[in-house]
Amino acid sequence: MENVTIFQHPLIQHKISILRDKNTGTNEFRALVEEIAMLMGYEALRDLPLQDVKVETPIEPCMTPMIAGKKLAVVPILRAGLGMVNGILALVPSAKVGHIGLYRDEVTHEPHEYYCKLPSPIEQRTIVVTDPMLATGGSAVAAVNFIKEHGGRKIKFMSIIAAPEGLERLQKAHPDIQIYVGHVDRCLNGDAYICPGLGDACDLIFGTK
Image (cartoon, rainbow, N blue to C red; front, side, top):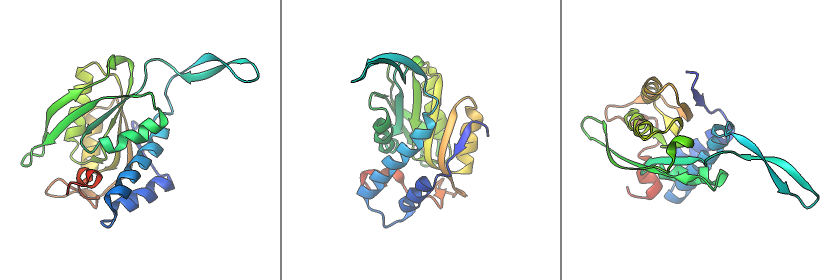
């Protein structure tokens, strides 16, 4: 999968292991999700375009590189994707933030849209879609579909933990996007939860168990 990056960095793997621990509390879990997103974002944003601009240093004027064009757009899949947003904004505070709301049918496990608001002009931005868990891949595929329908072109998807089934589904549906994953787990169970996973990331981030 040429468009898929699986992170091996020790800090990312260490923090994911703490996320998995059922004894990790809400505050720590939320902070870890942000930290992991920031570490992943550092690599995922390495190809942002640059342009030389003139600045005045305390010594003399100089031409120096800054991010070019329209600003980055971060688009979390509600609600869990919100937990990763601040990690990206810590790297690029000027980024715009959109939102895509999806809920999963408890029987079919397929996603249904209830909200979509994207920064404009979305077609001129690098778009980072965030969702901590890539399980069946249904929500991820649907979210990228919506973004493309609104004109989005350069899309990156970031997930902390993925099931092989979901990763394969997203990659096949959207081979033109870049996918970044912290860890690929063993499989999905009969209820479409990732195993060994870490439970319901949304409830753990927002304390809504």
